[in-house]
Image (cartoon, rainbow, N blue to C red; front, side, top):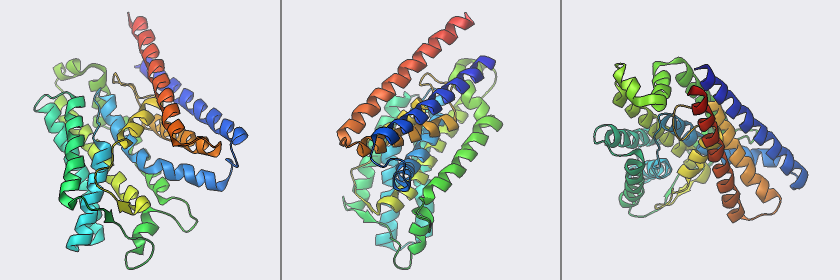
Length: 324
């Protein structure tokens, strides 16, 4: 256990050091990167991906994966927009339904994995396609819009988009959700069993723990987080177009892995994941500040992700040699 804690602390320190160096590099070589406008841009890029990343961190720690969170986020937003625009349901209730839709998809993933014994990759890949298709079917492939700062529902943008000081409101909600995630992982039975399942699921099961129930719980958390992310994405984007959503799950998974969450399970933290989210956001914003187009952002993000996975593999090998 001591070795695990030391490994997690080292990963977070490495990720934090990488974030600082990356930021300093873009301040030196970018255009006015050390400014309020770029700081706000970094925050705006971070918060809804942050919700997705926190949720999927729980799943990855158990040794699983959830590829559906991006399209689930879009589907939840489309359902909320459809109910608000076409059926006149109160906006606050639509937001609650969006979160419930996300949690329902998470439960569906959990059932496929724990009851039907599908591999997490296949189960969540299928759910990703179902969510993408369902959003298009329900809306008849029509874009859905959410209220802006004007009109009777101005509170929506004011609460979930920007504060009066023009700071993204989602950053404050994300900070609160991060604290909740920290408490759950470190102080609750769910957190202990999440790490235990990822470290050795069979031993955990033989000790009398209902591993399927706790695995179900982490997939529900992942879906719930996608539902929350859909609220902030809707506030930020306003118009949600069916058939989209793929790619956000990769951003979230990459952030978790870059922040030190091991794809082999048993290791990870919410704080490390948030650091990973900001590394990706600083990287994307910084590359724009030095004049590189969007394809370079994808290219360099892929390189950083591969580097993080290779580093985790080497740490895992060293840890296994020490145990032997």
